[in-house]
Length: 70
Image (cartoon, rainbow, N blue to C red):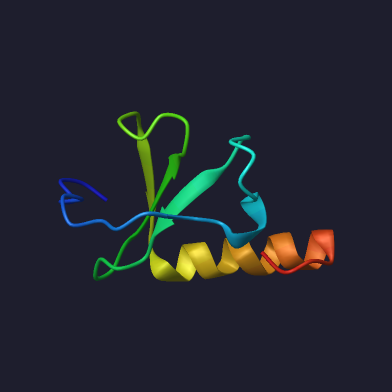
């Protein structure tokens, strides 16, 4: 994915992250055709991007391995 405009991305923390300021990721799913992921401790740092299908596959895998909802 090249030249993706992330200016309108609305990032949210995972509900399981708690409020302790620990290691968390933030996800933006409001952009058409892209899911953006960043480190909550470094909001101006690098952002990973995935297609919605890639992100769904990742979540399914995590759920099946961990046995928990994410």
